[in-house]
Amino acid sequence: MKKKVLLMGKSGSGKTSMRSIIFANYIARDTRRLGATIDVEHSHVRFLGNLVLNLWDCGGQEAFMENYFASQRDNIFRNVEVLIYVFDVESRELDKDMHYYQSCLEAILQNSPEAKIFCLVHKMDLVQEDQRDLIFREREEDLKRLSLPLECTCFRTSIWDETLYRFIFYNCIQTIILRAWSSIVYMLIPNVKELEQSLKQFTNIIDADEVLLFERATFLVISYCQRQHHRDIHRFEKVSNIIKQFKLSCSKLAAQFQSMEVRNTNFAAFIDVFTSNTYVMVIMSDPAIPSAATLINIRNARKHFEKLERASQSSALSR
Image (cartoon, rainbow, N blue to C red; front, side, top):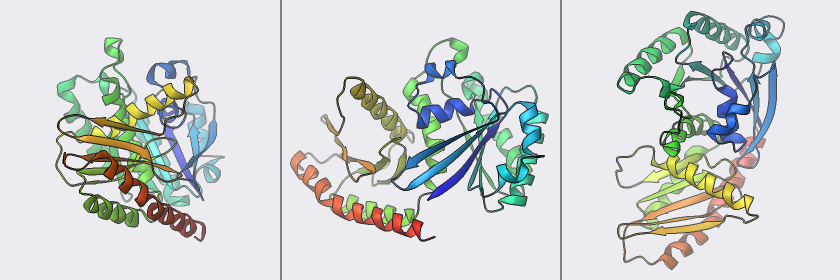
């Protein structure tokens, strides 16, 4: 099952850098060596087994953009499931950016009216910290208004702080991108509500505080159940990025990451392979529950979730 995803925006806005971080295991500093995208770069990313994201990374140079809306219009904008438009928050050509975005929307309305629209206001680290909320809200309001009658979902994103010439809370910043892309991919997953319901039942049965599912290749968060409030709303994506980087370190040493347990006086966290396409993380705070019991519960739940995954794949293929 293929889902066509358009990634568009002005040249230099950060489209290819984000794509490379999420799907090609780049880290922020490595994206400096990426060149400008020439015309359209196609890539197929397998996600959750049989879900293939057919990514069209469209070069943002003016000549290419004009061509997309003219001779390539039908080819580019036909059968699109998701349009992701990336805006450089510090662009000095905002009017032109908005013009091209509206042209994209007109082409989408004509060729793929059911497509989902996401706008990423990128490089927010370059904005003075006390101005970020205000600037993002203003940009979000403008984009939602311009998008009518279509609906768009906006995210603010960043990969690092170039104004200070150093990484700023590298893992924390990466979480913003992970959260945005997790939300985008989430709406492409078949039968996701059934998955969420089963995860909720599993969480209650084992008396866990939280349970998360990560996609195995990208480690994007695809579903979670939370029974206790936590003040850090980005903690899942932080964990995702930390474990992904740890996996990469293991692979460089010809080792294979499969599972780990982290424990202190307040909680225990278990991360383990779950189905053929997912990892699971279970958070327990009851000291009376031994590690072995939690690991057995994870093992026993695998069959149910593998069956659910196969059913979801079959449902998608029959569409």
